[in-house]
Amino acid sequence: MTDSPSPIVPPATARVSFEFFPPRSDEAEKTLMGTAQKLAAFGPEFVSMTYGAGGSTRERSLQAAAALVRATGTPVAGHLTCVGASREEVNAVARAYWDCGIRHIVALRGDAAEPGSAFTPHPAGYRNAAELVAGLRAIAPFEISVAAYPETHPEAASPQADLDNLRRKLDAGATRAITQFFFTPETFLRFRDKAAGAGITAPIVPGILPIANVAQARRFAAQCGAHMPPELLRQLDGLDADPPLRAEVTTAIAAQLCATLRRHGVEDFHIYTLNRALSSAALCRLLGLPAASAAQSTAGRARQVVQA
Image (cartoon, rainbow, N blue to C red; front, top):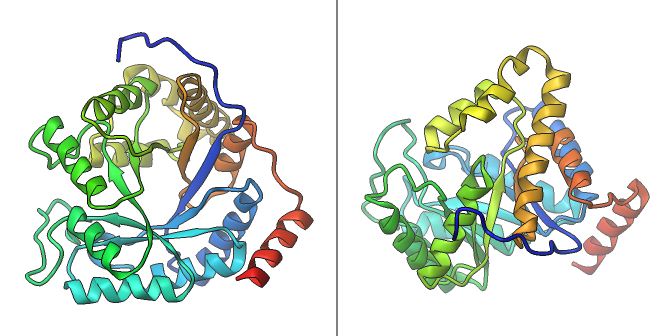
């Protein structure tokens, strides 16, 4: 990719998917379901439910994913990791997903339960995400998404080694890659071009983080190696003290990022919601996605339940 790629005509309509995390209380569950139902009105391709480090949220993730199926009628993807479990245990979770109607898995190696600790495979477990993808393919005809890292996974030996690992996951049978969040369009576009140059033809979907809390976003970025350019930090400075202004500014920043990507042919966006509806819904509106009325959304969910 050149430093100033030539823009192309953006697609007429963007497509979105949303990521949620499992609630830790009854009140948080109500918030999650309310958020999911509001965002379902934008017709997402799917929604996903994360799986805690070391499998620490296994039961809550399964329960929340199943609840999303019932509450929204939207296709749900359950996250699944290799950490701290044998192949038999991981396979059992995959079958549990299938049994509750989930046909899409986000297959991840996963992080150690102890922050900062190196990943160590279970003696009887999958050693990496590529092995997990192959194992899932042997269980059922799942749709499978995997992770990609535009700024290189922190544990990768090199950017090329990280790209080679992505290709192994896709060659093992994954459907698409979803990226870690990033903050400049060039970050994604350069990565997309490098992946294409390496012979990767599967869709690579950019992960978009509408910043809900600046301090939290900075922590997330430090943990995963996502660069926050000085100009962005200046725009964000002091916004945590003014939540209404923060919401307006950070939504505009995310929308501008998506608009630039669309001008370069990107059609799909995976939005990290942090279980909050407002910023994600505003971003969808700015992407040109109309929200169905409550009645239409409810009727659509009812039809899908009946058809299931």
